Length: 212
Image 1 (cartoon, rainbow, N blue to C red):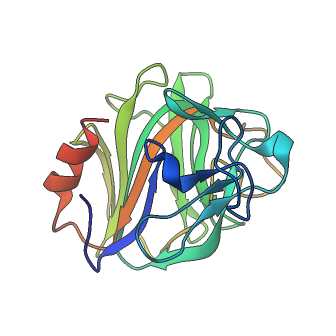
Image 2: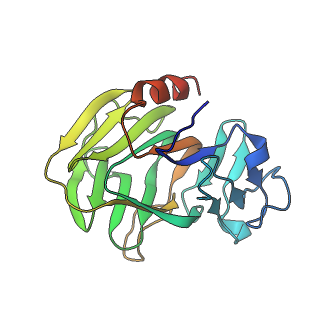
């Protein structure tokens, strides 16, 4: 079980009690998901009112079509230190914040590489990530702590960048960050997302999510 004051977001596709067909959380989901309740206690629920833009519930989690599927958080998350864990399979826009933040995997000449931007500065651009594959279910972690941004794949650090300024912000899952991109929304599956403002329980979280 995940708990603690550092927990900012917890979306769990294996918990059917958190999945709803509508963005008002009235009807339990059986196919389309319009509401994904946050289990952190912070009310950072993920919603999508437009039925054609809703991910689909499958045995592998929530399936995003890579065309227009995606979810918006009811509250923006903005933290100086933040560690976000994703159990996913796929590529495209993983998460973003309107206009300033984006994290995506895109096939540009040399394979599906990473673009990661915080506070309007893109410090990873068309960057290969060791261990990443869009064909396998993986645990991806994106962290910003004391100005250092890191990417971990299945618990192993793949990239690091110092002197990153600004807060780590998220206001949407799987959606593009503005209208001026040719990169797709998330194409693939999402099983679980956990965000914490501390690295104190990293190994515990990695061990828990590795079972997904």
